[in-house]
Image (cartoon, rainbow, N blue to C red; front, side, top):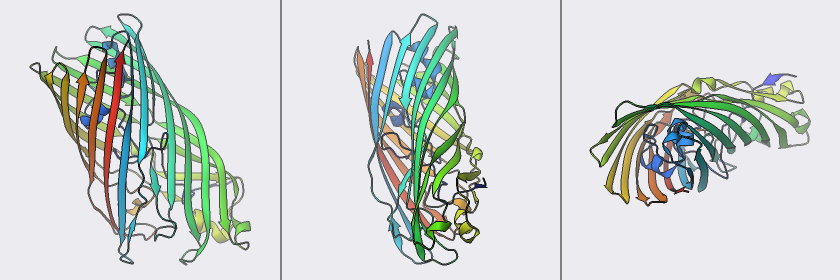
Length: 412
């Protein structure tokens, strides 16, 4: 059985319960709590609610008794493409997505705490019109992920906590594209890939109190190599369809490792300032491979040619400020610079991901038993000009995304 790269399956569209990516480089979504979104993700060291399971599980030692957090983020991405070849402007279909998350923590004793998280933090969803100019590359790409993440945190020293966790992930993907016989632009059919998988990873973290007012947080999430198993379905003419590898297909996708580090300082009794660096190891995503149960006929092999991705590792920088107006109200804001991992020759409508400038703001209402967090997160993308796309789809991409989040924390 030959290993081939599926031209369309080069996607990483992921959504949990119909979600889509808007924050981070590539197909990473780090937006898992409203307070973190308001802080533009500069939150690794200061996190003080159950979303620490995601952002820094070593911090759950700071949480008393049993606590839970539930919330969601509404995402509204908008993208368009102007072709240098035809001069036409194509607009991606407008969708609104929901990204939910849930966390639970329990303090077992003075040194040991347990936590559990349910969230999704990788993926993409791109949905173009069926007859648009780039239909031979992609018309629809979707990847959904669902993570369960139990963690244990141990207080080694009054100033130092360490944590480890286990990630179980269910993921499915869907990809659609039009078929042609290169170099001719005539459409001869449609392809549809649908597959899913379950796999596993781990995470590690530490929280260190440098002084009473300064904290250092570090969080690492491992790469996860997922082997998807599914079906390839093709709609084509009776002459062409026997040549297509309809039936079973497997695809290998490696979700990249993530390393986040932050330092937070409390100034007086009112201000908390944090600076974070987030490294994402996208170089693991260098090619896309697919195995078909059926052989690919040489006459249409160019439809399933190897597809290099050659993504780059990226480093994001973010800074946040929190101001406690009074014991009942905290205001937050932040800025994040998010660099694209996509080289120009591979910049395409499956994942049109440019550099981003992100601003966040929000507020937290604090009560004895509960906290309510609200935030708005605006993603301004750098307009991207593509002149060297390997499939010849050159032009200018423009995009903007808004995220509105709400999270509710409760202490038992």
